[in-house]
Length: 281
Length: 281
Image (cartoon, rainbow over all chains, first blue to last red; front, side):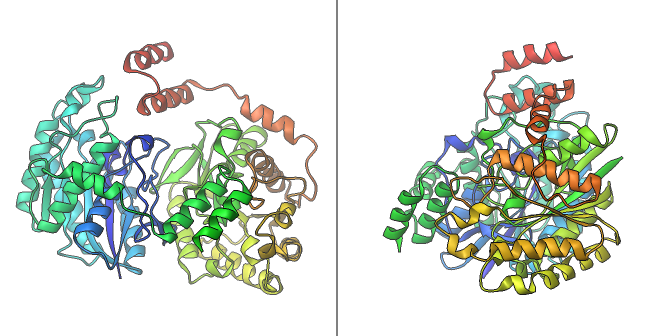
């Protein structure tokens, strides 16, 4: 059985953590949707832009595997898109329609088990926070209807405090108000849970969560999903869980995938590849 | 106006050329589909696997801009998927259905102008070539019907001779027969044109066209599209056209995109970013 999760929102859901700042996560039981089929997850999962990198989805999935279910597969449906406002996600628009199509394709080959939402930076000025909850309510309601999943859990992450520190901070001067709207939205709607970004840090651009923070955020998203509750503070054991995730020994299949990758990328020669391959089989 | 092209097939359509072996192509009038919307093209265009790299699509699009149309935009719809057989592309399967959905999404915001097909490595053994033409005919016929585009041109590339040289050559021992089937298919079907891979070379894996060869292949694909004819030999001016494509001066918008990328990736600091930005505006 495969349990799938839809990733929607803007760049911090797509993920902009630098790939070289954390060890990769390889787990043959974590999949991602590519062209209507599952592939073993590799990061970036959500390739919306050339800047795409580490997102919260990988450590969310790893936590799910570690703490909830060792038997089944978990799968990610990447549909987040950088720089998009809540209006860009209106139910008549291409982003929403693409997300529905991708999630429906996933439903043919998995049980859709939740929605991971992170959005709001693009609505953090010009009083857009005043209508945020109403607009998001229509999006979530319509999504659940279209997917025939009225009780689908929705995990909603908060915005980073670092937004006030960067050279583009004037565009984010109402991010506290958007955060308050996100918290209230989760309170007001069934099976919606808020996850705080407290203490998480950014890339030099002061817009995007860095790779380590994305790993932490994913663990918090998982705890909200597992416990069906808001997560309003940093978890005490985040660092330890990240360590456990990164130190998982590779299975033979995972070693095989890694070897294939190295060979395909030309970083090991054919004879070395064959030698290593022989050791695996 | 935007003219869009659907990329389907297996890994050599998705592209596995190493990104560091050719200069990048930036052209604000070349787009790619992401989440139902156009984005300015960056490579890899077709992100089916972590090994995805340079494909033929970028130089196809650049040639289209250079030789056919300087006014309009050209756009790529990436749906190719590595390792897939012709049976994987059957019209009931997820790959075909995904390609139809993506192409239909593109048709809402562009004029679908052609199909770029490269596939056959996964059918190069076990006498699969005997039924290749019949299977491909159903795929192309159904695709044209579903997209309501009965005369949509289809450009079909040949397989590389290097397939016989690698450590996995036993899987490709009938690649000449598949090539013959591809040539005959193009002869037998209206608005279908074959493009030879003669002289093109491979990555060390001897499976995938290298980056420079993908650039050349894209130019040949374009010539077939422009001249509505098979391209059975290398073109005499391929190297010169590649040079012209790579040396196109960047527009202000393209320089801005590049600057944003460098800043987002942390390769230039905020003050340097702002200095450069000021020079652009």
